Image (cartoon, rainbow, N blue to C red; front, top):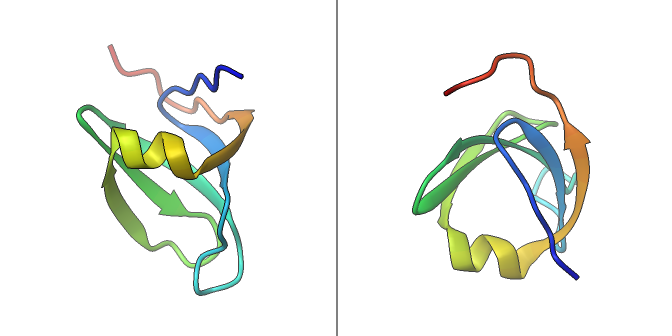
Length: 68
């Protein structure tokens, strides 16, 4: 199963955050990926390999602004 994701996508991680939700928004992509919790607003930066291992599902895009 190929999980493709892009900037501003909403993703569901395998384990929930301490605040109780497992929905995150991708806010930065590169070698590392920065995600923001949709419940409490906490931002976490993890490397891409670890992110793909912990990713459960990509819900879809919330592309408010397009970055080239």
